[in-house]
Length: 117
Image (cartoon, rainbow, N blue to C red):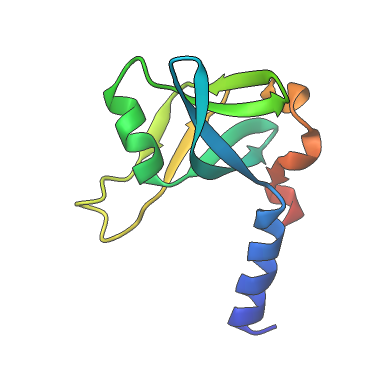
């Protein structure tokens, strides 16, 4: 398998697990970015871009949300780690350890398991 085929195959797998991320302005949810929910040894994480979480981390009243159902939202909080865009040579990557149990409340199929490879 060529490198291009490996990349193409991986992107196809990850696209199935990509979800929209929202912020809340007053009583309205607004699209803010996207992320991938992954499971590592049964622990759920959200992987996204640094520029998506950078502003959220600066404002303690800001949160990222995902939609569980039409009128049911979950805040993605927890320990947010992200690259410093000025120091990372263009690496734009962040992850959040999401609350345990989210993978039980959310459709399990949305989580990308590293065992899927």
